[in-house]
Amino acid sequence: MTQTNVLTINLEVADLGILSATVWFSGCKIKCEGCQNQTLLDFQRGMYLDEIKTKLTDLRKITNKIIYLGGNPLDSIDDLKQVIQIASDLDYHQFLFSGYSFDELVAKFDIQTHDFLVQHLDFIKTGKYDRACESLDQSFRFATTNQEVFESDGIRWLKVYDYLNRGDYLNQRDFSFSR
Ligand code: SF4
Image 1 (cartoon, rainbow, N blue to C red):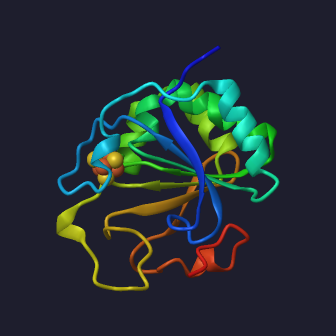
Image 2 (tube, helix red, strand yellow; image 1 turned 90 degrees about the vertical axis):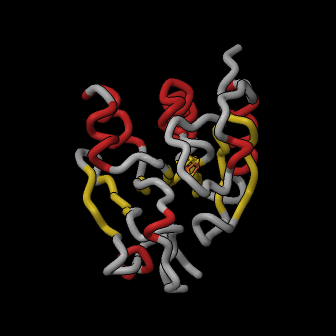
């Protein structure tokens, strides 16, 4: 039995704007000033893989969307890959929130890990919480305007969202940001 850095999994609307299985990872090496998830910054062991599989199987009856956040899931890459595989087997649409910028993400992992992520995830949001980039625009979905979204075509990441285009593209998608 393998224990992971996933502390809990619940159903939430808040972070995607649609009902999603939400997987909360502990541990983040970025430590943004003003982080709202201070209790998740330290690495802690939590759910076992078989518990995660059971929970995601149950939630799959309610939603086909899953989001990984925390904490910074990419700082628990080995655990994250195992959970992503479970979610793929259950045919979830998968969305990862990362505090790393896209360039940092590219530099951080080997080619096998990048291939795995781009083949299994549908979207990633990149960029740390940056107080200097807070937005007063209520139509802006994310916390700070430096954050971006990339969509996988199965081979590479394509940038689909930034502060200027405000999610119009994603609003037309099955995996949408409905408000
Ligand atoms: S990356 Fe996310 S979890 Fe980590 S410190 Fe920044 S806002 Fe908090």
